[in-house]
Image (cartoon, rainbow, N blue to C red):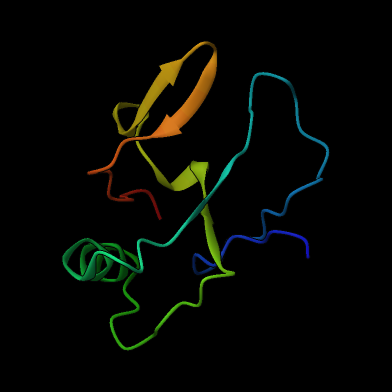
Length: 85
């Protein structure tokens, strides 16, 4: 199943050609953390929408400070909240 960004007005999908400097990654919604999920949905302005476990947000919606790097791999910080829409 291909990954698509579920942010409003975002058409990013896995497998799209992109320049190497603009890496794109996808992150699952924090379904197990109700408080954090609520923050994500408020930022997205989709408070009455409930994501499924198969839906994602792309890295374009997170500030650089939301990421940490280990061994050259980019990870989303456990307290990260998307703010770019």
